[in-house]
Image (cartoon, rainbow, N blue to C red; front, top):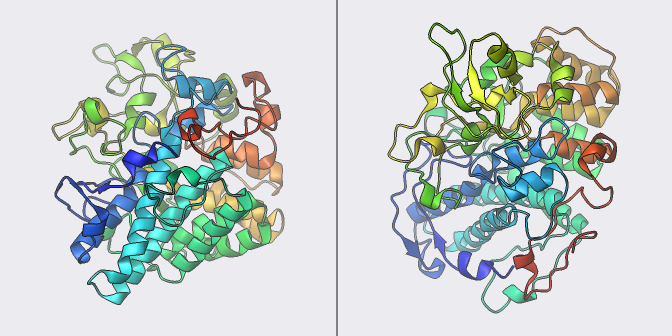
Length: 502
């Protein structure tokens, strides 16, 4: 926690349209830094602070060290890729399960604690802010739900983490110790349950798209319960989110009729979206502060694009900008999904296009010729602001969508008519027939439906399948289920390294 000394004793709020906030949610002009003791005087300042609490959720797909590309690389469906074996030490090491306390990206720890610090500070200050009580209650509920999301990411990644419910100070920061994972999960549950009672059922699409709703908090709680092995509780809360399989739920959510429409960049905050990270092409994200938490674009897009992509005159291949060739698809996933109706939306088969003379590219590290089509950069998505083109793609990404909650509830139920109906609804959307509901069928459906969205590694760990599926990647059971804690967080503190790591 040593690095928190400089990062978190002060809060700076800047113009943001990322995280789970839409461009319409709030427009805050940067004012530089301010002391937290002198802030939170009125509703405007509290709103700016709330945007700061939302901001770290952008880590799903923002910055080089984003959750989706990292978790893809550590699964059996993707390689790290990139320009070479040293291109991004953390993502390369996780792909081969050789992470150490020195090569793990510290931002996976720091960025989430930054969000937690901001949530804790806002919760502490809210009672004294001059604003209506109903707004205070909503801001507090959003802060608690976001704090729960950040802790859920931390406990899944690092397992043994400090549980901080008040802002750190210069006098206590070095005395922090790790909490038992069970205590962290209990706090996550508490935060989400309290938030569910207050959050609105819907938000105005034009002005508040991306703000958390009751259904979003319930979906996250159901996911948390599932990871804890509380299947009865998970099924019950997820049923409230899912409603009748295939129909519109109580919050207006419904599976999109066309799977491909999930990946249309302009189709933001659609009916299938439950928790969504917003990005913009109108930001000024640039190299000198990329990944610092102030960049607003989707970095995943440029990361997964093929290198030096080109197409000859008259080609019918897509017109794509070049990328960096991370998260290339393994032959194993290609073979598993090649006959599935979701293949085209998931896999960009550049190997076949090159063989047909329709396109060309320069293969990067671990190249297979298969790229993640869900998140490929598009020429129509290139930045409109003043920042670097590569860093300002505007595609939003899903943290949770309805097909995911259908399959999580089916997994929690395990069997029965409702589990069957949930599985059938996901398959029917893409024109597939019913198959008997079993854990194996649900596992396969999650792999096909959610490929490349950053869930696979966590799924394998939850199912106890990681050691088998990732044996050829060097995965060691009892160690590689979690990340090592970064060295700089251990120095001068009472924190202890995770088992199996030096």
